[in-house]
Amino acid sequence: MEKIMIQVGNLAMAAELNNTPTARKILEALPIESTVNVWGEEIYFDISLEIDLEPEARAEVEVGALAYWPTGTAFCIFFGPTPVSTDAKPRAYSPVNIFGHVSGDPTRFKAVASGAKIRITRAQV
Image (cartoon, rainbow, N blue to C red; front, side, top):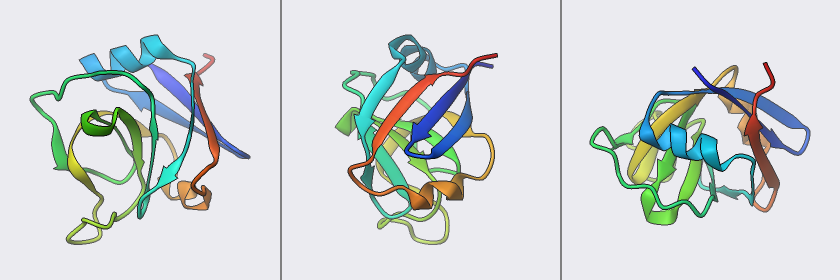
């Protein structure tokens, strides 16, 4: 299982990628640098990759999920409910490709503000 590092300001979090076409395409595109948008308890940012919706794509996701949103060519990190959630679980605006999950406490992303710079790299093993 491939691992990545997510760096936003003073926050550094490791994450594990699934073995999916989306995860492989994102891994090939690293390093990625972008500007964060906050939507409820989700951060997302444009990665300018065109990736098709996978058959397993869904809107209901788990806390800590890493997902790709084809509609907005965005990398998403879910750490709690979003404005379209119907309960305490995260929910994407529309179906997303789940490609990994945060290692550790994803609620640490609550400290991230819109406009923050984010960098995604391969984890050093």
